[in-house]
Length: 116
Length: 112
Image (cartoon, rainbow over all chains, first blue to last red; front, side, top):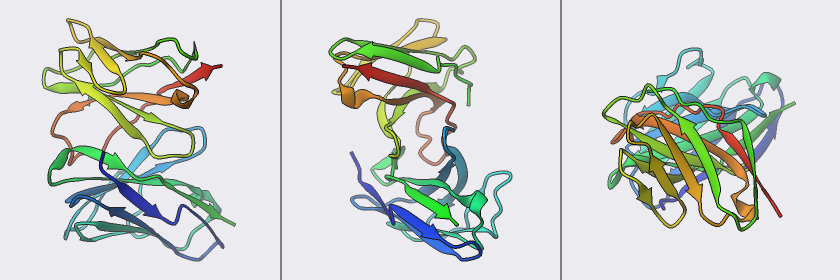
C-alpha cells in the first residue's frame, strides 16, 4: 500500500506555544489530505480536509485559527496547533488521497501531542 | 453516509477464524462497505471493501448479505497481531476526496 509518514511521532510542548506536525505522502501525489484527532478511548474525528493549493475546509466545531493547515505541495501538508492548551493533547492522524490512489485514503502513523 | 452498528468487543482464539459483524440497514444503493482497523497507537489500516458481491484479499474476506443491510468481515486465521479496533464504514466509492466518519468499532482481542 501507499506510504504516508508523519513527523514528529510524538511531541511535548508547553501551554501557550505552537507546534507543527508534518504529513508526507512518500510514493504518490496527494491532491487531498485529511487531518483527524483521536482522544483516549475514543474514535477518530475528522478535523479538516485540505486540497493542494487551496484553503482547508474545517469541520464544525474545529477552530480554523487555532489549527492552521497548509497543503502547499502534492506531498506535504502541515498542521500547526497554535497557542496549545492541555485540552489539545491528543493523537493527531493524517491521511492522503490522490493520483492513482484517488479512490482511497492512506493513513499516517499518527503524532502524539502532549501539552503541559 | 449511512450509519453502522458493531459490537463493542469480541474475543477470538489464535488460529481460529474471526468473524466481525456490522449492521448498515440504511445503506444506499451507491454506498460501499469499507473495513479499516487500528492497532493501538497507530494510524488506521485499510482492509477491504465491497458493494454487493463477496470480496477476498490477502488480509480478509468480506461477506455482504443479499439485502446489503449487514456484512461480516472474516479474518481466516487470526493471529495475536490482529488484535485491534475494527471499523466498518459505509461510504460512496471514489470518495477519496471525502473524510471518513468513524464509529466506535469493534475491539477484537485475539487470545493465545
